[in-house]
Length: 256
Image 1 (cartoon, rainbow, N blue to C red):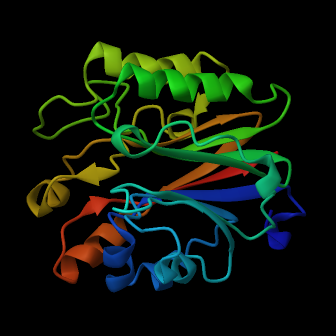
Image 2: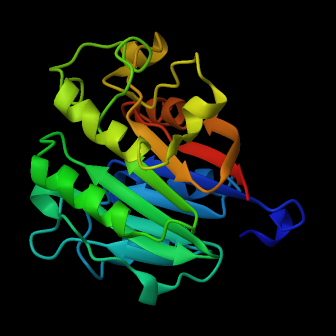
Image 3: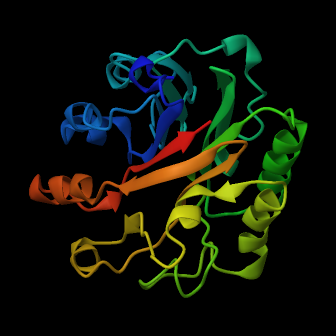
């Protein structure tokens, strides 16, 4: 927990699919992330090999824990950055890797934090692995599952751009519903029940029209979400620097 937030017992958590650590650093993510004032940052799609010095650059000012690829590097790779010390001994097993995406979960300050990247294959093995790991967590301890779920929940509210339907069909949407049925709350939806809250756009035109998809989520159990910020300015910054919009960081503030 950020010491500055200890008086009112709040914690600020950001999740972001950076679209490779190399691109994130090139576009100035380190300076941008400093504005989040987040206690914990969950990262996805790092595309780094274990031991790559760029993982250390991403974690400047934070304690960090990563699940990175070997050789060749995973196209995914996830990490958790924390202002407090991460209890690495509490780490749950990495239950699916590479072809099924990636997941890590560790404990910090009495809260379990997961950084998740789910691939568009949405295999039964992937879903089963995540659900079994969540079921194994202590029911009386707070949990925040953050990341790129590549899945929508509401066909009308969560998506408004062309696509192949990945993450749209009932089988793909059901696994996230199964997580919610385990006592979790979709933090953004709890605060903004009627706003689309898109977090990914295919191209600049769709970004300018705000026709996107809400696939980056924070699902929470045991904490109360009190504020949410979708950092659209990051995507605008990427576009101004010559890139595409890609994923936007999502920050949720929680009360214990």
